[in-house]
Length: 379
Ligand SMILES: Nc1nc2c(ncn2[C@@H]2O[C@H](COP(=O)(O)OP(=O)(O)O)[C@@H](O)[C@H]2O)c(=O)[nH]1
Ligand SMILES: [Mg+2]
Image (tube, rainbow, N blue to C red; front, side, top):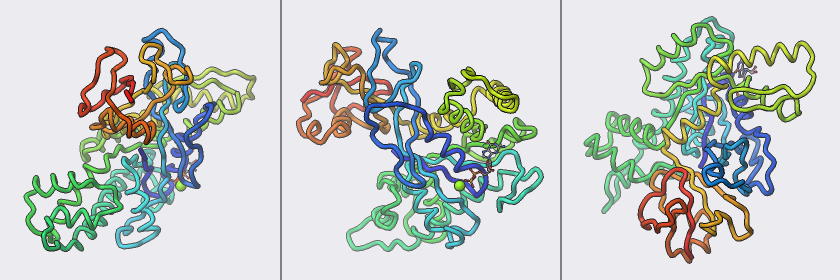
């Protein structure tokens, strides 16, 4: 699972990326840490089932902090987008291909209105302009690729479009649905544009993180205006506040828990003042909004689920005795057999069924797994 952080320049994408990927967790063997200059590991948070079963978990691939399991996924900090990217301006194609590598997107906008579309200082710049610009560029780019589709003999229209869009991680089923719902029987400017908008919305779910809320005037009015104009979820946030708290925690100054923190060391007056400001912001907004944006995207927009896997359904442990060791993020239609493939190709090859550890009953092989389910794969 990959999530891309997109948006125009100077809105705080890299700060947001750093805040998400600077999780201060100690874990035995992490699946991956830093992946590349603009790729890192973030985590979605889900309640650990340990309390429910009266046990203490021993995480292997997904750390547990104060009862929350942090399940890893890849985060990509995509280069800033400028208007005209779909025609190759700026880092045009690099931007677009990095964006399509992701399964879901967080668009960061600057809700403070203090920088304009070019990233230069401004007064009350309307971030709705950026939401529109990003949508336009992505749609125009995909439209231009769809327009190049030529249907080959014995090939359907959807298949031809799919072939042209290969590499953009857009499933054939979505293209087929679009062709049908939009009643498209030939590719021309108008049909290509509507199919582009459809596949983008379906294949790349997105939320908008309204960043720099700490510096925004009339935050609620601005959010309301955006919600009225666009069909996205808008989440107020402060990436800078999240990053400050994560860094302060990393250095042992504070203990940070989602919506609050405890000071652990003596701080100077400037540090105290900075933390007091952040406390006011996160109290008012139920946190910094950064983790909220990621969780909302994964669970609500992408309809992802988290499943736990064990080998012993009574003791809820793996072969080495570790309790509730592993958790995986899966898509909506993932079946127990697919989960077996996530564990190991050998497990998938020898798959004989799966048991739901809450009920001790066998699960149907073609039934999608449920969020929070604990599975024992039978081999
Ligand atoms: N006030 C405020 N400034 C922020 C916030 N997040 C980022 N910034 C600042 O915005 C500027 C651009 O940030 P950066 O992450 O480099 O933006 P990018 O170009 O989109 O990657 C930097 O000066 C950041 O310190 C925030 O939540 N609040
Ligand atoms: Mg950046």
